[in-house]
Image 1 (cartoon, one colour):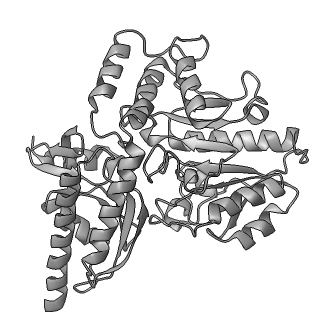
Image 2 (cartoon, helix red, strand yellow; image 1 turned 180 degrees about the vertical axis):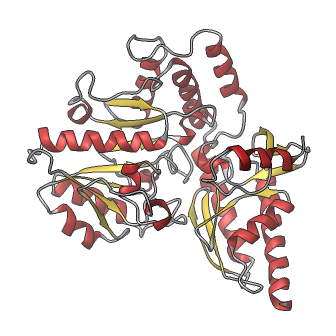
Image 3 (spheres, rainbow, N blue to C red; image 1 turned 180 degrees about the horizontal axis):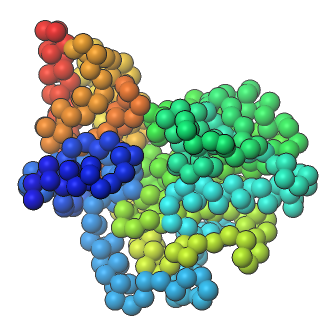
Length: 410
């Protein structure tokens, strides 16, 4: 079968809820992938940061194979010999008392909101069924009904109401507006991304994270950090919150928590918060399964052992410096932290945008994806070599130069 055959199968039998770049990937290793016809590409998306450790990291593949031969699922009706070891390691590494394992990042977010509401009623003594959760405008943590209830993206919301009540929105990176919302006595939590990924890698002003922490403490509101995309080394620290030395009350992790082997997420918090849950009040058949626990434990150990946050910090500086110094008139902004970066593309050649540039990069052997209309997010695996990063930068600059010439001749 050719690439077009696989694309036609998805188009005919699958839901059209995605608009993929037209490449059919069949193999991956490290920072590279190959399509069904053998063409090689540099992966500069990392499955939206799910493969920070690189495609098919040998330690993760081996951990999965070992566990597949032993036990994959018991449900939480019984204990298994993998979950507790994983929980102990992750809590110890990140400084939390307890964690709740789930599967997808959006499940981690849903878990955090349930925890916050329970804490609001039991500890803050908010009247029953009145607790409010505040979110930052431009957030993205999934497309469940709860997630889109907090969204400001019309494409996520239109046609899917009614929405979850008692969700409030405040502008991102605005501590004055945040304080006005958090001062309400019925607010139990503020959930936000330390860097907004899907919004276009929006990096807040220095001091914002510290300000959020101070306001949440002042008004007795739980600070929920959605680090599903920014966590586990992506931004140059183990957690993006570490850039300002703050600790959230609830931390949500996902994506790279399994290195892309299978879905694994978690909400981590204190005894005071997670200790409120009683049997039967929250759970998941697959959450904390032995296979997920074994792989996730090894995935986090890889991040630590290979010092991936430091690599992300160093290579991110190389990336942003090169794209800033290329001085392309089509690039109106370069930003990011670590290896989570973005560029804004000015419309060119009669209205072409970031999407067309992503297609041009695909033809040059580099895979990335636009977010919204004018922004391209670049997030290669943290294991990428500096040589491959520089090769990717050469491809990006060459594609920009081609676009500049096309724009000049249009």
